[in-house]
Image 1 (cartoon, one colour):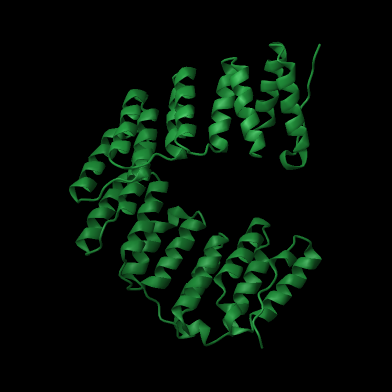
Image 2 (cartoon, helix red, strand yellow):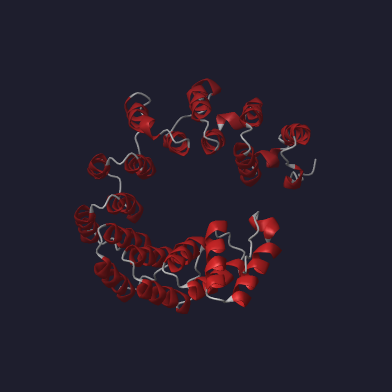
Length: 362
């Protein structure tokens, strides 16, 4: 029987059609190559999770257990655990993991890491310390670099940076290598909390091990300096990163622009936005929302108009209240043509933006 991918276009939120799709999906699972098509499983589970159709997720994933040979392969079972995690169904993921011995499927660090990731993806970070200890001490699976990195990420989400730092020591004691990803995870958390000096200390430890910071590391420090109201140092840091061959990205510029907004400095905002565009860094929705709101607040409606127009032409959904404020400001300044143009642009895209603007001219 030839393998034919299941058309994703058939997956709708209509309950009748959805049931038909699920039945077709289960029949398609009888074809060997289909069962190993990770993308379609991932896409279907993601769609069902967004639609909160968890019963159907359980139906298609539990259906896979009838394929006895595959269920003895740890990689296949680990994938089911991961898919339950993506759907935030941790209890189901845990059940699959616990069933592995009776399915004659080995449990190694591969399935353990799938379970740890399922836990964090299910937003059950409070369960992570106990789960990590249980996998190591009760199940007898020795953690690897991936295990530690997932655990460190969970601890940072719990804002327990001290414990996360201790995990680095444990990693190295157990012969696991700390990567740039490991350090970045904790550095991001430290700077986000405004603990700039602690972040700097870890930065130096990292560099002492010949691990060079990347754009994520620099962006974390830029945000930390902004939180600490040290805008001049943030500017110096961006010059330093360029000198070290690290190219700023949209998040770098957004962080700095946000800092100048906090300083109530429209000149600085304009300068860094201009440099961003000049360096061919494409502004995103956050960029436009920050600047348009700030320019309107400072009554620079012409500048707000320019950015509003650019964002609309790129079909970015800046909020209705922000755009309405720009239109009203333009009207006050008798810039009627510009106000009309914005209204027309929004109203042409009303199906995309789900709202329309009003133009009130006395």
